[in-house]
Image (cartoon, rainbow, N blue to C red; front, side, top):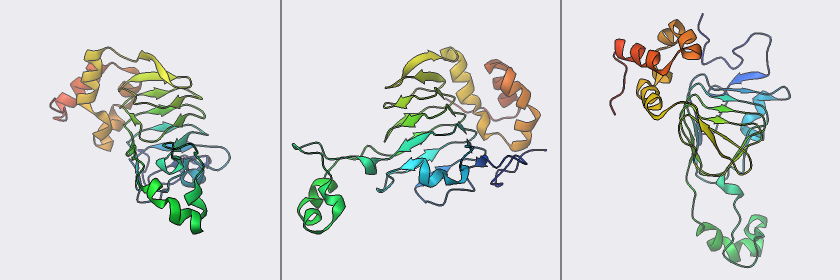
Length: 218
């Protein structure tokens, strides 16, 4: 039986695991099917506890089949402070005369843009993602990593600030996987080949995509 991507708790007796797509309510958070968050304390609080400073128009976009461990945080651009002058104190936040005199300083701050996470990305325990970062398909973010810059597809990063540790596959195999784009396959095809997805090779995934007319053109 294939899990229902619209089920909030897809694993019976495990309320700590939630699919995020049916959970989030903000129109500025977009999450693909089967992406889950695991937290023993309050998995359903993801939108409030794990997406912080989401005051501006920037979006958080997360692809399909991502695995997000407890304590992962996405810091959004609303937490940025002005740095052009001597003080970084956010006077505007407190309203009144302070806001009237400084609103133009805040609105003139450049945006870092949307935070975008690809498909099949694994976030380790207490990873942190800074505003405007883009993380490629198949990447792995190590536990405790602080991601301040973009992460290439199928790359493992770790540390603070996060740095590349290694590529998971060679360039040719990464190209095969991205063209196969298995995360966009029909659910029944994913189910039939889930063992190959977990333990096979990029070449095998490519062959399945080609056989089913699902390979993307470069």
